[in-house]
Length: 472
Image 1 (spheres, rainbow, N blue to C red):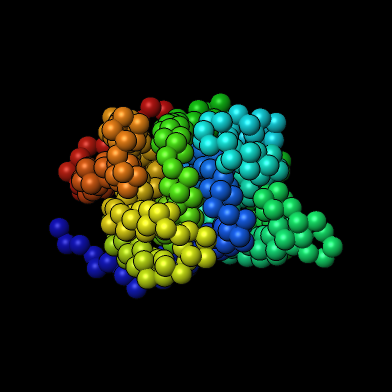
Image 2: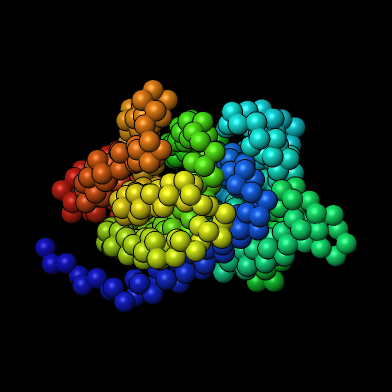
């Protein structure tokens, strides 16, 4: 069968149109976190480590709400491709409602029970007390942050990627300025230390949300302010939404719990290792920031074509995204390796903590190429309607391989910290092989729109498969 020439030039242009603003937004956020760490560094290694542990609680929150983001983007992208604006509005209303329930839970834990959270993440009293100060204030930013994320996911999926980017610019600038004012006590204000950094985060999230809403209003976005259309759900839509989203929600939730267990194990290592991990997580966010741009582009560009019924185009785009993703990740890792010495020094690492963080960055630079391919491919599957395959693989390997390896190396055999850290990624090469096989098969294309469903039989026949009968 003759294959049409793939339009690389048009594809790369479409990817960069989405990827660059998203990557820039994430880079800004990561830069803000990096600046937070640098500005808190003069207060000592213990402060850096404690705030890093609080960030792990934020990561657990991320895992709990990201399932709804992933599920929502599946519907946003496909409905957008099918030009079904009512569908986008319904999906946004349900997604935002679910995410705000998560926000309420984590707000309550951080503000009213911060001591419980810190007891879970570390047994070091000096870190525990600092973390309580920070967490009890920064918790007020969680509802603002999560609602902004819901808006950003919908805006990105409908190709309004610059609006969240403007919000990120404003938020990072505000956070940096308010950190300087509140941590150090400028303009006659008292020096608040870690409490000042937490309050600066809250103020920055207020600014972020306001900028997004104002820009959406100015640009007459058809979805953000369509309140009456956000809640026009019926039983059939809710059932389809949660049927498609359930694997994604389970994936993020189970992974969040697993990562929490890993962080609890890491939090019981030396103070130097904890400080090194806090700095590494910030740098990891830099790499993920670049990756997220390409992953979001994959979700939007593939999901849009699946929704419109152009399944072969979606298939060809999905395969090419891996090449672009690895190129971005490789460049990001090389950049960090080149500048890591002055960066670590600026973040108050020295001696053992400096050596540990350098080793972590070297290990991650190798595994990131495989890890991010797995992540991008899974996001592609989700946008095309297959939320189950990647989820089953990731959860199975996490609980059957990764967690036992981390626990045994860290708590039983008391292995060197870098060995424990490397065990976090032992499953990636195996999953990569299985994920690529599934990608080539095309079985991950599972449309939710009438146009996509009509085109599915011919697409599956071209791959040598019979399409499965879907329940009506």
